[in-house]
Length: 474
Image (cartoon, rainbow, N blue to C red; front, side, top):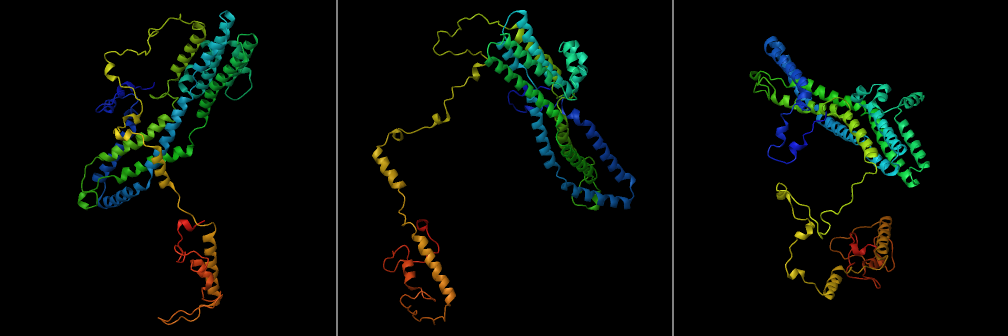
């Protein structure tokens, strides 16, 4: 049922995707044409009623309703909600495809580790793979309507050869209301252990490999079953559906063409058919229909997974691998490049133009002048690096911290003792008493802070350090 068009777009060309627009099976036209025709019919019905059935007073009232709906339609965040929803559904769709159980790893492990060319070895290998196919079939039968229609009862499984009558009796005898796809996996494990005790599985490492492949296969079955059980939250689906439908019900009224003679803004032209509204409907509702098709790919849509084909392929391939191909290895021969030091496969005339030179790395395209390729003396390089990377001298530890703390104490003392009367302009400052540390006098401690007193450093700290440099910070 899957629509495959990969070969049509294998090579990009002018209008490459345009050739896909005429396909009908699996197309958006097939999904959407009913909704589009219904929307167009409803729109034309309202338009005809406005033009020919309403009175003048009713027309004025309808025109006010159209303007209101046209303004209110932009309040519905349809693109935002719909975009996130489709992205979520698409991610879930791909996850469901990757969770479909495939027996390839399991059949290789069984064929390589369950030995014996006699009837006993053959029945062991075939039964082990039949149990794997039965586990996958029980899951697919539970999630896919197409598979359930093919195998509606366990009698059909017996008749198809996936179950024996004894196995069906044991399967139906288990009193459990849950899906029993795990039962064949348990039978597989028990039979693999029996083969180990018989020596058909020759060591514990081989048995461990069999059980690891079985658990991986069973994990895919379980994940697929849980995808069917846990859906996208219903409220999210409802919100998206209501947003899309209410938006276009609003557009059904708000996008009506009004009488140009009334002079409404944006209604100077009367086309009769809303071309761009129909395109908007095609894109948004088509987006919603895509999500509707992808949310459960195990139905009977054109693009749903071909589960019955997967069952046929997996069952046949697994039986061939463990039975017909068991122990069959082609005779060893020297290949045609046995004596070639550098073997190269040939090209046909059609493939020869596609041959490309070997890629060695993007840095090999860099071009350098001959003088730039000369090595420099290491002494010159070392002196240059030393001049560049030599760190600037730092002050002794704690210097700035002590000065800034002293400044804070002096400012605090000046605030508490009062600043006193301000001297007249041009008058010399009142000298401070030696050792005075109160009032508005800065005193000798501040001189030490500024680097002017004996023992202090002058130069770079001859101003207030309100904005210290990086060298002053410890």
